[in-house]
Image (cartoon, rainbow, N blue to C red; front, side):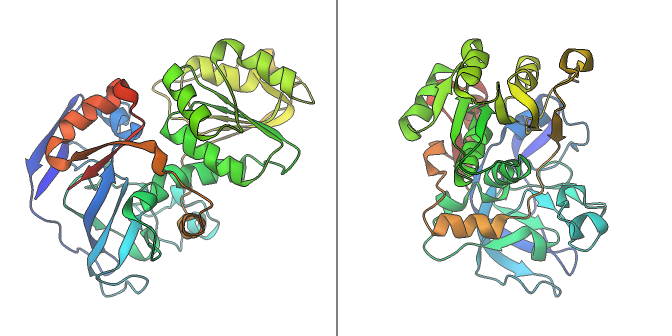
Length: 345
């Protein structure tokens, strides 16, 4: 089969590889029907993910059809259409029992697919702990509708949950309107705060937000602090979700927060950030950081099936797997209005 393979920093290629096989009783083999490219894939290629293993197939955003399951898998069966979770988790360790599946203590726990083991930018993918990591797609939900369930929407849903948004009261600031930022916006909207402000430097992406979500207030970094303070009741945002991942946006996040606010760091950074405690002394902020605890996929798919959550506008381009190198170049360049690319094996 064809598989887009990480070869070391700055290098990847579409190679011929053997089709994966079941290796354990909780494995499933999934035929990929639609995948995508994530900014985290770019981080791997840039060398910003040290745990990434050269030789692995990239990709952790995918949906597909179950081809085979191990003897201990009872939640899905061959023929089921499924969304694949970005996280691999056992479901029984301390962290999994408490919903902190990103920190599953199993050796394969956390972000494994497309990072430490072969992922889904290929024709087939082996999914360990398939009884936890695969969610059946409801009838009537298309592959395109379900595509972002296991990563982008799971991330946005998790971020909106831990941000402690109060319905009808809070002013929420989301910094960054890339794919993860927009999915975070969609999930924050489900919690019905009083107001949502999105800060984005790209004119094209600001236009995208205005076109698709006109009820949202949009601003740019230069005017963000002024906009937030003018529209907030208590001198700043009640909840800030930082999804952009730069030194400037990290600082902006806590500067725009009101005292005693929750600042949720969703972004992945290429370098360490400075937390200037003397500058923020007295604001009594709560910071929440980390990787997504992707254990809400069934609820996300129910919301999609009910018409309450729709991330399909993010798919601006489609490429066959045979042209995935071209797709990566476009995605990295942010050219031609690209938001997300669907990859069809």
